[in-house]
Amino acid sequence: MTGSRVLALGHYQPSGVLTNDDLASMVDTDDAWIRSRVGIRTRHVAAPDETVDAMASAAAAKALAASGLAPQDIDLVLVATCTATDRSPNTAARVAARLGLDAPATMDLNVVCSGFTHALATADHAIRAGSSTHALVIGAEKFTGVVDWTDRSTCVLVGDGAGAAVVSASPEPEIGPVLWGSVPQMGGAVRIEGEPARFSQEGQTVYRWATTQLPAIARRVCERSGITPADLAGVVLHQANLRIIEPVAERIGAVNAVVAKDVVDSGNTSAASVPLALSKLVERREISSGAPVLLFAFGGNLSYAGQVIRCP
Image (cartoon, rainbow, N blue to C red; front, side):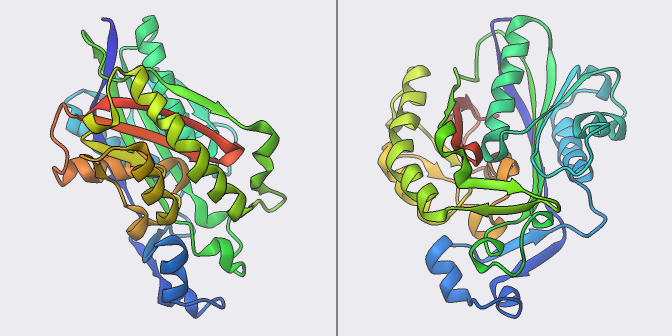
Protein backbone atom coordinates (compact mmCIF):
# COMPACT_ATOMS: atom_id res chain seq x y z
CA MET A 1 0.00 0.00 0.00
CA THR A 2 1.32 3.43 -0.94
CA GLY A 3 -1.25 5.68 0.68
CA SER A 4 -4.50 6.00 2.55
CA ARG A 5 -8.04 7.13 1.94
CA VAL A 6 -11.08 8.30 3.85
CA LEU A 7 -13.35 5.29 3.64
CA ALA A 8 -16.40 6.62 5.51
CA LEU A 9 -17.63 9.46 7.70
CA GLY A 10 -20.04 10.00 10.56
CA HIS A 11 -21.15 12.82 12.81
CA TYR A 12 -23.10 13.47 15.97
CA GLN A 13 -24.68 16.56 17.53
CA PRO A 14 -26.52 16.82 20.84
CA SER A 15 -30.29 17.26 20.75
CA GLY A 16 -30.20 20.52 22.72
CA VAL A 17 -30.29 23.62 20.50
CA LEU A 18 -29.55 27.18 21.60
CA THR A 19 -30.86 29.92 19.31
CA ASN A 20 -29.75 33.53 19.10
CA ASP A 21 -33.00 34.55 20.73
CA ASP A 22 -32.22 32.18 23.62
CA LEU A 23 -28.86 33.89 24.05
CA ALA A 24 -30.52 37.31 23.97
CA SER A 25 -32.33 36.34 27.18
CA MET A 26 -28.97 35.51 28.83
CA VAL A 27 -26.61 38.31 27.74
CA ASP A 28 -26.82 41.73 26.11
CA THR A 29 -27.11 40.63 22.48
CA ASP A 30 -29.67 39.94 19.78
CA ASP A 31 -30.12 37.87 16.63
CA ALA A 32 -29.16 40.70 14.26
CA TRP A 33 -25.94 41.47 16.20
CA ILE A 34 -24.83 37.83 16.17
CA ARG A 35 -25.67 37.20 12.52
CA SER A 36 -23.93 40.35 11.34
CA ARG A 37 -20.71 39.55 13.20
CA VAL A 38 -20.34 35.77 13.01
CA GLY A 39 -23.18 34.44 10.84
CA ILE A 40 -24.43 31.93 13.40
CA ARG A 41 -28.15 31.19 13.89
CA THR A 42 -28.08 28.18 16.22
CA ARG A 43 -25.67 25.91 18.04
CA HIS A 44 -26.06 22.46 19.63
CA VAL A 45 -25.43 22.14 23.36
CA ALA A 46 -24.55 18.91 25.15
CA ALA A 47 -26.41 17.91 28.28
CA PRO A 48 -24.49 18.34 31.56
CA ASP A 49 -23.80 14.60 31.73
CA GLU A 50 -23.00 14.21 28.02
CA THR A 51 -19.25 13.72 27.72
CA VAL A 52 -16.76 14.32 24.93
CA ASP A 53 -16.05 10.59 24.63
CA ALA A 54 -19.78 9.80 24.39
CA MET A 55 -20.17 12.22 21.47
CA ALA A 56 -16.96 10.97 19.87
CA SER A 57 -18.15 7.37 20.16
CA ALA A 58 -21.53 8.16 18.58
CA ALA A 59 -19.88 9.78 15.55
CA ALA A 60 -17.28 7.02 15.29
CA ALA A 61 -19.91 4.28 15.46
CA LYS A 62 -21.70 5.81 12.47
CA ALA A 63 -18.48 6.08 10.49
CA LEU A 64 -17.52 2.51 11.34
CA ALA A 65 -20.94 1.19 10.31
CA ALA A 66 -20.74 3.07 7.01
CA SER A 67 -17.25 1.71 6.31
CA GLY A 68 -18.30 -1.94 6.35
CA LEU A 69 -15.40 -2.81 8.64
CA ALA A 70 -15.71 -4.74 11.89
CA PRO A 71 -14.63 -3.22 15.22
CA GLN A 72 -11.69 -5.62 15.41
CA ASP A 73 -10.34 -4.22 12.13
CA ILE A 74 -9.52 -0.86 13.71
CA ASP A 75 -5.91 -0.72 14.93
CA LEU A 76 -5.55 3.01 15.65
CA VAL A 77 -7.85 5.55 17.30
CA LEU A 78 -6.96 9.24 17.25
CA VAL A 79 -9.19 11.81 18.95
CA ALA A 80 -8.65 15.52 18.46
CA THR A 81 -10.07 17.45 21.41
CA CYS A 82 -9.20 20.28 23.76
CA THR A 83 -12.26 20.07 26.01
CA ALA A 84 -12.16 16.58 27.53
CA THR A 85 -12.09 16.99 31.31
CA ASP A 86 -10.41 13.71 32.24
CA ARG A 87 -6.78 12.90 31.48
CA SER A 88 -6.66 9.14 31.90
CA PRO A 89 -8.00 6.99 30.40
CA ASN A 90 -7.73 9.39 27.50
CA THR A 91 -10.67 10.05 25.20
CA ALA A 92 -9.42 7.70 22.49
CA ALA A 93 -9.15 4.82 24.94
CA ARG A 94 -12.67 5.51 26.21
CA VAL A 95 -13.97 5.49 22.63
CA ALA A 96 -12.20 2.18 21.96
CA ALA A 97 -13.81 0.68 25.06
CA ARG A 98 -17.27 1.97 24.15
CA LEU A 99 -17.02 0.52 20.63
CA GLY A 100 -15.50 -2.80 21.70
CA LEU A 101 -12.33 -2.40 19.66
CA ASP A 102 -9.60 -5.03 19.91
CA ALA A 103 -6.27 -3.65 21.20
CA PRO A 104 -5.87 -0.51 19.06
CA ALA A 105 -3.30 2.19 19.71
CA THR A 106 -5.15 5.12 21.29
CA MET A 107 -4.01 8.73 21.33
CA ASP A 108 -5.53 12.16 21.95
CA LEU A 109 -4.26 15.23 20.08
CA ASN A 110 -4.76 18.75 21.39
CA VAL A 111 -4.22 21.22 18.57
CA VAL A 112 -7.50 22.96 19.38
CA CYS A 113 -9.40 23.99 16.21
CA SER A 114 -6.96 22.38 13.76
CA GLY A 115 -6.85 19.12 15.70
CA PHE A 116 -8.77 16.99 13.21
CA THR A 117 -6.62 17.85 10.20
CA HIS A 118 -3.51 17.22 12.31
CA ALA A 119 -4.96 13.86 13.40
CA LEU A 120 -5.90 12.94 9.82
CA ALA A 121 -2.34 13.60 8.70
CA THR A 122 -1.02 11.53 11.62
CA ALA A 123 -3.23 8.59 10.64
CA ASP A 124 -2.12 8.92 7.01
CA HIS A 125 1.53 8.88 8.10
CA ALA A 126 0.98 5.84 10.33
CA ILE A 127 -0.66 3.92 7.49
CA ARG A 128 2.05 4.90 5.00
CA ALA A 129 4.68 3.74 7.50
CA GLY A 130 2.98 0.38 7.88
CA SER A 131 2.12 0.70 11.57
CA SER A 132 -1.64 0.92 10.95
CA THR A 133 -4.13 -0.37 8.40
CA HIS A 134 -7.50 1.00 9.53
CA ALA A 135 -7.78 4.08 11.76
CA LEU A 136 -10.60 5.96 13.40
CA VAL A 137 -9.92 9.71 13.32
CA ILE A 138 -12.30 11.79 15.40
CA GLY A 139 -12.79 15.43 16.31
CA ALA A 140 -15.01 15.93 19.34
CA GLU A 141 -15.64 18.93 21.57
CA LYS A 142 -17.85 20.11 24.40
CA PHE A 143 -16.95 23.75 23.96
CA THR A 144 -19.99 24.97 25.86
CA GLY A 145 -18.34 23.52 28.96
CA VAL A 146 -15.45 26.00 28.80
CA VAL A 147 -17.28 29.18 27.75
CA ASP A 148 -18.16 32.15 29.97
CA TRP A 149 -21.90 32.55 29.46
CA THR A 150 -21.72 36.17 30.64
CA ASP A 151 -19.26 37.15 27.89
CA ARG A 152 -21.25 37.98 24.76
CA SER A 153 -18.13 38.12 22.60
CA THR A 154 -17.45 34.40 23.07
CA CYS A 155 -20.61 32.66 24.26
CA VAL A 156 -22.39 33.37 20.96
CA LEU A 157 -19.70 31.46 19.05
CA VAL A 158 -19.51 27.95 20.41
CA GLY A 159 -21.31 24.66 20.03
CA ASP A 160 -20.81 20.96 20.78
CA GLY A 161 -20.53 17.89 18.60
CA ALA A 162 -18.30 15.31 16.95
CA GLY A 163 -17.25 14.13 13.52
CA ALA A 164 -15.35 10.99 12.59
CA ALA A 165 -13.62 9.34 9.66
CA VAL A 166 -12.48 5.81 9.01
CA VAL A 167 -9.11 6.01 7.26
CA SER A 168 -7.76 2.91 5.54
CA ALA A 169 -4.75 1.81 3.54
CA SER A 170 -5.12 2.35 -0.19
CA PRO A 171 -3.12 1.26 -3.29
CA GLU A 172 -3.20 4.90 -4.41
CA PRO A 173 -2.97 7.91 -2.07
CA GLU A 174 -6.31 9.66 -1.69
CA ILE A 175 -5.17 11.87 1.20
CA GLY A 176 -2.69 14.42 -0.04
CA PRO A 177 0.43 15.72 1.73
CA VAL A 178 -0.32 17.82 4.79
CA LEU A 179 0.87 21.38 5.14
CA TRP A 180 0.92 22.33 8.81
CA GLY A 181 2.47 24.92 11.08
CA SER A 182 1.78 27.57 13.70
CA VAL A 183 2.61 31.08 14.85
CA PRO A 184 3.83 30.41 18.42
CA GLN A 185 4.52 34.08 19.15
CA MET A 186 0.82 34.81 18.61
CA GLY A 187 -0.49 31.69 20.32
CA GLY A 188 -1.99 33.69 23.16
CA ALA A 189 -4.63 35.11 20.81
CA VAL A 190 -6.79 32.07 21.61
CA ARG A 191 -6.79 30.67 25.13
CA ILE A 192 -8.49 28.02 27.26
CA GLU A 193 -6.93 28.61 30.63
CA GLY A 194 -7.57 28.79 34.35
CA GLU A 195 -9.45 26.72 36.90
CA PRO A 196 -12.17 26.23 35.89
CA ALA A 197 -10.91 26.49 32.30
CA ARG A 198 -12.44 29.31 30.28
CA PHE A 199 -12.26 30.18 26.58
CA SER A 200 -11.12 33.65 25.55
CA GLN A 201 -9.70 35.16 22.39
CA GLU A 202 -8.51 38.31 20.71
CA GLY A 203 -11.15 38.27 18.02
CA GLN A 204 -9.76 41.00 15.78
CA THR A 205 -6.26 39.52 15.91
CA VAL A 206 -7.56 36.12 14.82
CA TYR A 207 -9.74 37.66 12.11
CA ARG A 208 -6.90 39.69 10.58
CA TRP A 209 -4.48 36.75 10.70
CA ALA A 210 -6.96 34.31 9.19
CA THR A 211 -8.18 36.53 6.37
CA THR A 212 -4.76 37.84 5.34
CA GLN A 213 -2.38 34.92 5.92
CA LEU A 214 -4.37 31.74 5.38
CA PRO A 215 -5.50 31.96 1.73
CA ALA A 216 -1.91 31.73 0.46
CA ILE A 217 -1.19 28.79 2.78
CA ALA A 218 -4.33 27.00 1.58
CA ARG A 219 -3.27 27.48 -2.04
CA ARG A 220 0.06 25.86 -1.15
CA VAL A 221 -1.87 22.86 0.21
CA CYS A 222 -3.42 22.45 -3.24
CA GLU A 223 -0.01 22.75 -4.89
CA ARG A 224 1.31 19.91 -2.74
CA SER A 225 -1.48 17.69 -4.09
CA GLY A 226 -0.80 18.73 -7.67
CA ILE A 227 -4.09 20.51 -8.30
CA THR A 228 -5.25 24.09 -8.69
CA PRO A 229 -7.93 25.65 -6.48
CA ALA A 230 -10.24 25.70 -9.49
CA ASP A 231 -10.05 21.86 -9.53
CA LEU A 232 -11.61 21.60 -6.07
CA ALA A 233 -15.16 20.28 -5.75
CA GLY A 234 -15.39 21.20 -2.09
CA VAL A 235 -13.79 23.43 0.51
CA VAL A 236 -14.22 22.62 4.19
CA LEU A 237 -12.58 25.24 6.38
CA HIS A 238 -12.66 25.35 10.15
CA GLN A 239 -16.13 26.60 10.98
CA ALA A 240 -15.04 29.52 13.14
CA ASN A 241 -17.00 32.46 11.80
CA LEU A 242 -18.87 33.02 8.54
CA ARG A 243 -17.07 36.37 8.17
CA ILE A 244 -13.79 34.41 8.02
CA ILE A 245 -14.99 31.44 5.96
CA GLU A 246 -16.44 33.45 3.08
CA PRO A 247 -13.51 35.79 2.34
CA VAL A 248 -10.87 33.08 2.87
CA ALA A 249 -12.71 30.68 0.53
CA GLU A 250 -13.01 33.43 -2.09
CA ARG A 251 -9.32 34.35 -1.85
CA ILE A 252 -8.26 30.71 -2.21
CA GLY A 253 -9.76 30.80 -5.69
CA ALA A 254 -11.92 27.66 -5.45
CA VAL A 255 -14.46 29.04 -7.90
CA ASN A 256 -16.12 25.69 -8.66
CA ALA A 257 -16.27 24.34 -5.12
CA VAL A 258 -19.08 23.81 -2.65
CA VAL A 259 -18.03 25.76 0.44
CA ALA A 260 -19.10 24.31 3.80
CA LYS A 261 -21.02 26.81 5.95
CA ASP A 262 -22.14 24.54 8.76
CA VAL A 263 -21.13 27.25 11.25
CA VAL A 264 -24.53 28.86 10.60
CA ASP A 265 -26.37 25.97 12.27
CA SER A 266 -23.66 24.46 14.49
CA GLY A 267 -21.49 27.33 15.69
CA ASN A 268 -17.77 26.89 16.27
CA THR A 269 -17.19 23.30 17.39
CA SER A 270 -13.38 23.58 17.33
CA ALA A 271 -11.73 20.25 16.39
CA ALA A 272 -15.13 18.76 15.52
CA SER A 273 -16.01 21.39 12.93
CA VAL A 274 -14.19 20.06 9.84
CA PRO A 275 -15.31 16.41 10.07
CA LEU A 276 -18.80 17.47 11.17
CA ALA A 277 -19.22 19.79 8.17
CA LEU A 278 -17.64 17.30 5.75
CA SER A 279 -19.84 14.44 6.96
CA LYS A 280 -22.97 16.54 6.40
CA LEU A 281 -21.91 17.51 2.87
CA VAL A 282 -21.31 13.86 1.99
CA GLU A 283 -24.56 12.76 3.64
CA ARG A 284 -26.47 15.32 1.53
CA ARG A 285 -24.50 14.19 -1.58
CA GLU A 286 -23.38 17.73 -2.33
CA ILE A 287 -19.93 16.46 -3.38
CA SER A 288 -19.42 13.49 -5.68
CA SER A 289 -17.46 10.45 -4.53
CA GLY A 290 -13.85 10.69 -5.65
CA ALA A 291 -13.93 14.46 -6.11
CA PRO A 292 -11.12 16.56 -4.56
CA VAL A 293 -11.93 18.39 -1.34
CA LEU A 294 -9.73 20.82 0.55
CA LEU A 295 -9.77 20.38 4.32
CA PHE A 296 -8.13 23.29 6.08
CA ALA A 297 -8.33 24.13 9.77
CA PHE A 298 -6.85 26.94 11.83
CA GLY A 299 -7.23 28.61 15.20
CA GLY A 300 -6.02 27.82 18.70
CA ASN A 301 -2.23 28.07 19.11
CA LEU A 302 -2.60 30.02 15.83
CA SER A 303 -1.92 26.65 14.29
CA TYR A 304 -3.07 25.38 10.92
CA ALA A 305 -3.13 22.14 8.96
CA GLY A 306 -4.63 21.18 5.65
CA GLN A 307 -4.73 18.50 2.99
CA VAL A 308 -6.67 17.66 -0.16
CA ILE A 309 -8.61 14.40 0.03
CA ARG A 310 -10.75 12.44 -2.35
CA CYS A 311 -14.38 12.48 -1.19
CA PRO A 312 -15.55 9.07 0.09
